[in-house]
Image (tube, rainbow, N blue to C red):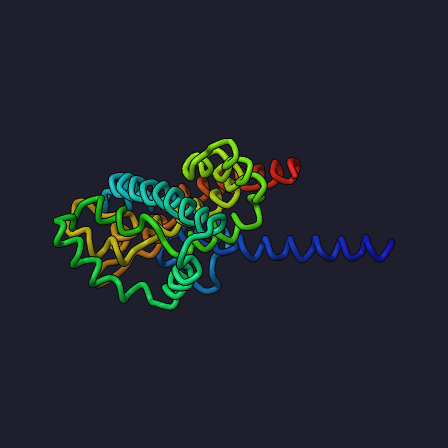
Length: 275
């Protein structure tokens, strides 16, 4: 066997080991969700999937409005994701391909916001939304997350290398304005970067707990993560039921990731073929 084949085989083994390590937490979640709470704390621990999964899922549905909370979370996640993809890519396109006064200073200020903990903005944001009368509404979940520094930074770095200056110059010669250049030149090339940003944003909003806990004051309108927290009892917790709820909340994310990752890989391959 040649040295190259040995290296390839070792690389495949390492990758397979990494995949198994990455998948084990999901498997362990299924194991805990399909057993009872005493089984979870038994020694030696049970490593096989049990027979109580649907029973535990039924307990989740009996204790919280799971599907109502999921619908609210889905609307908020989709709303934030769409706004972030539009505003962040628009700003990134301007930063990457246009010269304007104060561009570098403004981008530096944008990067500086990475060093500010998100918790420091909770009180000012809450006061502002209270003045608008948005507390407890979907607007309080969607509008504050409509744009973010990470998305602009990521898309700007992607746009700088992915969009040739010649395409921008050709569009200007054809009389295309800024928005037409963004729509016809920028967006088709930025699709792989947008796919990643969309997945990243959707998952972050879906899993957000602190901000919805603060702004959603109606106990009958809670996001999924806040609703799942109600499964923890004051005097005792049915951990198998909690893990079943966590598993049910993760399933939509897996679907979003698979769809988005497929689009991301397909767009990258298409871009490689074009260039």
